[in-house]
Length: 260
Image (cartoon, rainbow, N blue to C red; front, side, top):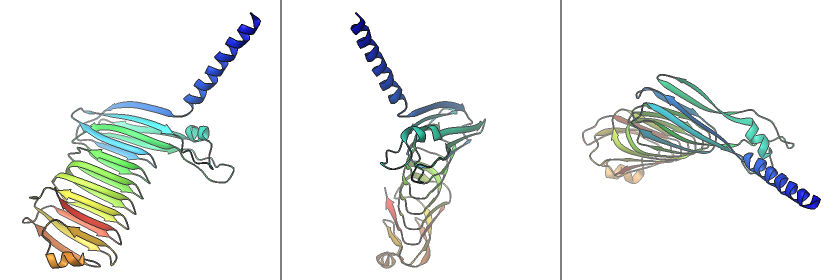
């Protein structure tokens, strides 16, 4: 009888340890905020997967999952989770979301930070601002303006109706417009940016390209100049009669204009 009790106690202890260990593998945050449909959503993050979708509700829903970066050398997983949190600041017309890290070095002097993975749902007519270092970001269905700054993040934006101000150092970006409503700016140092617009879009291209920058276009921007890819040149061209200005700037990245 005694041996059975010891056996059962051992099983319970084992399951408790396993359960506690699993609970330390990630942290979750789930919040919903009321916000005007024309308000502003701001995200400040460092690394992880970010998916932003839009809806007709006058509210912002944020789900965040914090997971450790499983590098062999670096800060322990448990410490990474303890050092990472998501903080909010909200009002009737704005919601601010931030990945916050309390730094603590490992034995080797490095600081490994956890991934903060987001799924955000926001009003489709709200303004979106994102500041990032190296996340994978997907944005769908925004019908307003986007302001996005990243160092080397990968960006996918679809069904954009409005405008964008994008600044990246060496990240990759693909932006698909449903409609370009106002002036936009795309700037990269050595990243690649692909912009797709409906073929009948009336807009103006204003370019500032470095000597090692590449540029190609499906739109009619002087065939001879296209062959040269406008390397090391500034130019301004009206497409389909002209309209909102698409400002593009690159030092040595590749910028492509595509007709969708």
